[in-house]
Image 1 (cartoon, rainbow, N blue to C red):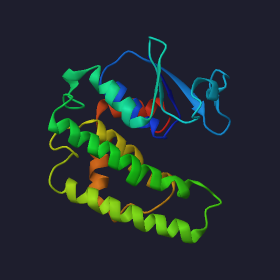
Image 2 (cartoon, rainbow, N blue to C red):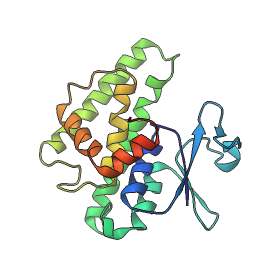
Image 3 (cartoon, helix red, strand yellow):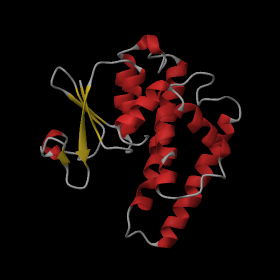
Length: 202
């Protein structure tokens, strides 16, 4: 399989999970500004949505949307326990986190990445994100990872999104538990390998 990614984008979560799962794969970097792959191909002809991640399967099928890609990858390596078995309440709880991170965190960052967003709108978005991060912090006060004692796919997604605060030079100090979570995730060998591969860690 091939993972189409952009360094530091939400595809980082999929990149982390594919490494954690130990799955054979190749990578192809996408320039989201030009929609060109590193090989010069028009990415919109591969994925008409134009964004990452996209996972090209050996069958020729293409999977998109980070929450779906993460679950597919986890299901290819169930022994790694990156997602619970389908149909279990634990799996639905993990899907709940993926949905929350996608809609209430990930998408709320969008105006902050656009240079033409008015400052008033940015301030409102930051307040909203702050309340969402407060909620996540309450969960992390009870256990080290979102689902309990073990790292799972939602942790990779949270790690990715929380990391955008640093990219945007937004102070993350109000959420020390999320910082501690990020440090735990960063220390994982597969995450170290992924960050170095994307040029995000020397």
